[in-house]
Image (tube, rainbow, N blue to C red; front, side, top):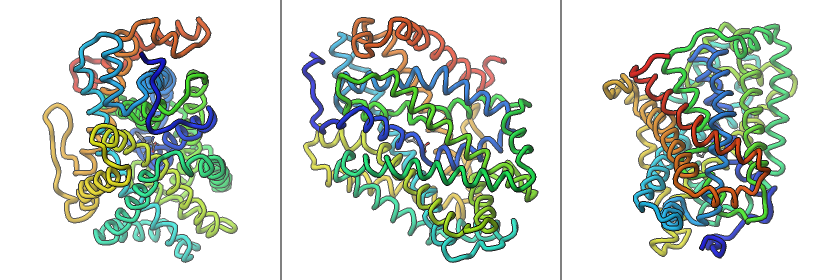
Amino acid sequence: MSEKRTSIHGQWANRTVFILAATGSAVGLGNIWKFPYITGENGGGTFVLVYLLCIALIGIPIMMAEITLGRRGKQSPINTMIALAKDEHRNPGWVWLGWMGVAAGFLILSYYSVIAGWAMSYIFRTGSGMFLGVTADGVNSIFTDLVSDPERLLAWHTIFMVMTMMIVARGVKQGLEKAVTYLMPLLFGLLVVVVIYAMTTGYFMQGVEFLFTPGTITREGVLTAMGHAFFTLSLGMGAIMVYGSYLSEEYSITQAAIWIAIADTVVALLAGLAIFPIVFANGLEPGAGPGLIFQTLPIAFGHMQGGTLVGVIFFTLLVFAAWTSAISLIEPAVAYLVENKGLSRIYASVWIGFLTWFVGLGTVFSFNIWKDKTMSIPYIFDNLTFFDTLDYLTANIMLPLGGLFIAIFAAWVMREQSTKEELATHPVIYKTWRFLVRFVTPLAVIIVFLNAVGAIKI
Ligand code: PHE
């Protein structure tokens, strides 16, 4: 029975540690690198609104469901799905949900690490004083130089993967707690510093308007906003599930989920408020793509008082935030190998790390020698590079699909009594949650999917 299950990987010291670890997973490149550039590409206001709605109506309920599943199953997502399906006397086929999550985490990490490598190299670029008094053109050419050099990208990607696998090999609980307690608030503080700089550019209100005034959005844009809600909250692939499996019974899941979602959203909005005023003040393109933060933030660091130091610390913390997310991307796979194949954590980490690193080469080349090699899948996407394809498949398809089935499992497959017991929350909150995961969340995900492929029109 689930009551007697314990995790062989240990458990969090208390609820705060869990919230910190899960926030560490949620807050990462998704908030600071991805949110601004996809907001820019999708025209701002309406995109942000759809994203916020998805966080509230889809993200928080699914996060509660995912933690619930993890805590009840107490194993890697693959084995958790097997165990829970058995507890509820349901089809063992649900295990594929665990496998899809492992695959998504693996694919995401392969490109995540390359981008984290860019951030690492920017610690040194900022530190060398390269950005002092820099112009928009200057920053642009520094960025282009970096990404057009596969060797440099490969070196940083390798360093980041080694760093990540070293921590995963030791077990995620050591070190994560202290690091997240001090470094997350510091990152938050530095973002505020950049927002204050953005206020001095004279274009702050233009940035605010861009972010918060509704305009138009494409069908694709709606899917991207929803996909990003999953990505930024680390939902739909088992990261939050595996962290939930290390959570002991006495802590409230509802509160934890709400705190994590709020912290994550605030960081993303701050990043937007920091970046868009700089974009407009320097006549840059909001839709510049994945290089956006690397083409804007250095301008702030190159012109503010003490900017070199602020910049070095900022990029260091960004790498750190990426690192705490990367760990959670790969933890489900490592936990599975330890459980089923009897591998040591070290061995499992080295193997998975190597494979992820290898797939990452495709992303390294997407920005230079394979820049013009694109792929298409009829009705789904057209002409995407290797990196864009991975990003599309994972964030826009695999995570929402994973989330949809997590919601279906928690709301339709598990008995009401099981989830009630696990969530142990106020009856009104429980009823609201159940209504959301039973009806609102699955319908919303399905409608957004159908709308994106043009099968229905909203
Ligand atoms: N949430 C992380 C970020 O925003 C990325 C991530 C996605 C981590 C999925 C784990 C699982 O950067």
